[in-house]
Image 1 (cartoon, rainbow, N blue to C red):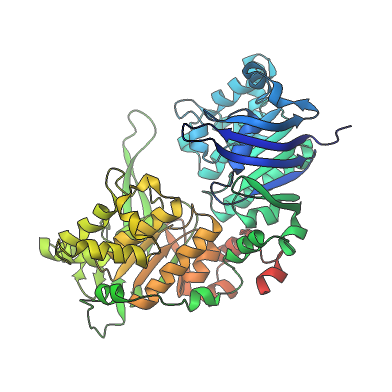
Image 2: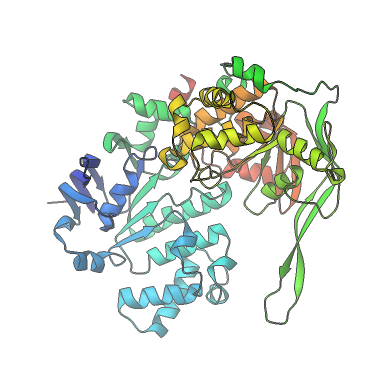
Length: 564
């Protein structure tokens, strides 16, 4: 007799193609019991989400289950037709998607969306469904649920929207819940709230949960058992603590070793191996010889945005996004900027790099003077060359219609840093410097992985020989091994080229590894600023201590591996 709620056996998922079939998942076996959270982990392209979509019957065309079985409480799901699977979805299997905004209808009030789902899935009148919807919102920790029922998704924070999505997933009282990267874009405090909610619902309702993620810290804090995938195949599986503390496979050990630590800074980031050559000599040309200790300094900054009040005739109001004290960034220093979404981190970064104008306050660069005095085109052009930005999403910051060679050559030619005859040599050397092959120059951005695209963005930023980099969440969407490669590359470039950086992130472990000093923001203001070691080891602010306490920590579970 089958004792598992969910069981997949020798599952194979194939995507037919005219040049040959692509096997996305091969020979995959997994079990999930009632009241159990099973983690499914691996890098992008490992097949994690494909397994979840296959269980839900949501494989994208032309994907098919070419072999194996999927059983839900003994019922064979691969034998159901589309209408049978449609009846099953929501009622017996719920799904939490990664991005809550794409899971919610922006034109419908939250209460209407939830009531409609409950009425359809449970076959009850809408009036009764509205009462249940209000209870569901209360169950997932939404304050004042009766009021929130009348609001639209954009009026909720990211964490609150994810709670609404969880309530939607539970609308039909399912037996199994599939959570596909439910906390990737969330800050540590909101992430903990969402994970605690999933754990409590799992225990109270005896749900089976499949947690799909690439975050080992989330797995360590949440899952009872874990399955590690790579290239569509199962690498190893077992109880979470046992597997993370003593993995048997080299790939799992590599994943664990790649994770940045939060308890101390590691030598691989503190003292990176320099791989520079001729290209570094070219990149360091026109270095400003200056005795100024501070590369950037500013007086207290304020940035207000004008917003429209609710209501037809309510007028406008001011929203204060940043209210920071006087600050400075020293030459060759990495200043880490951390805080929750909406705290003002990215806005402050854009103010310091001249992408936004402050409502009040002055920003001064040692090599260029005050930003407010840059009235001439030549001064602005020189400043733009010295100050570059690496954005969070590499795909949206690259022109998809341009080949990589043109993407890198264009800024070099614009600033007159090389002739047309030698620019191709410089492009090839830049690609090699960031760890990409020479033939990458002839490809378009869509032909690269996320990590490779981020390397292209770094190469583009370096192409104009900058002195200052704003790194705005540059690794938040990357897998742990790719993230480690990016951090090591940035630290190597900082050491070799003497770059000054402002590193904006909500990942505390990443910030500790790369930053010399750390500033913590909350509600547009600084709550703490100091040397990285002091802030992480002896924080003076209660809010900083809260962030450190709520962050998922892997080192507590895998000490033997990490020390090795």
